[in-house]
Structure formats: structure tokens, C-alpha cells
Length: 160
Image (cartoon, rainbow, N blue to C red; front, top):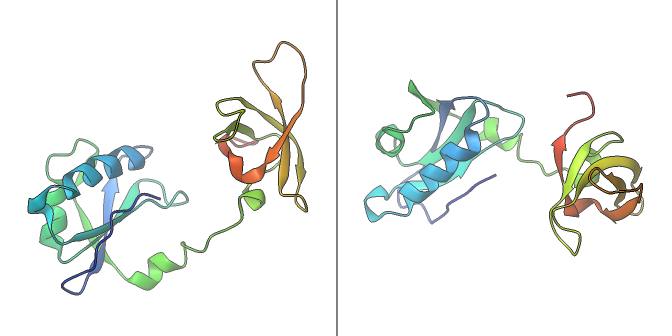
């Protein structure tokens, strides 16, 4: 989830912006750079919800502010700004522990710690210890590595 935040001076609203599926993060990064410019006051946050592909959410003072913000961005669909109730977004913002989203057979990358950058397949999930054991894909021989679950990012799920 990407975000840019400041105290709203006017009541804010959430708007749904349709984008090319798979380009949500790229569009959000472009929006983030635009929000940091002084003429883009009134934009409070940019949300990406991984389970809702093809859409990003923008918290802003008005629809017009969002329209100016997204103007000219390649992967934004034309006429795609729709108001959304805050409650509809909040149900997706409940944080799940990372270990709950990992399963045997998933391909993951270690994103922090001394083994950062190594990717491999999960061969064991130890929920009580909050650890996963992976077999690196590019190792010369099989060498299982156990790392904390919050140090990995899923690259490819087992069934996908």
C-alpha cells in the first residue's frame, strides 16, 4: 500500500480510479511524485489494495483534484473516477499476519536481513515460530534456509 498523508483541511472523500491491471503500483508512484508538487494540495492519500486489481484509491478534497492529478497518465482509464464510501475501503484494510498468506509451494524472495535478494520455494511453514523454510532456486545444491515470515515477499503463489 502506497500513501501520502497530511491533515485534511476540507472533508476528504475517496475516489476509485480505474487503471490497467498490473500497473497499480506504477500509477501510484507517478501519482505520489505529482502529489509532492505544491500545486497538488488537497490530495491526502493513495491506496493500492492487492486483492482489488485494476483499481487504485485516492483520498482527496474533490473529484476535480483527482482529475487534475491523473490527467495524462498512460495506464489510467478515461472517465474512471468514481466516489467510494470510506467504509467500503476500510473492510480491506484489516492487516493479516504475513504467515497467514504464505503456503508451501509459493515462490518467495527474501526482502531483508543478511540473505536479502535470495528467492526460492517454500518447503515448510512454521506458524508458531512465525518462520518459513525455503529452498533457494539458484543454489548449486539443496540448502534449506529458515527465515522469519515477515522477511519474505511472495513472487508467485503455488497455484498461479
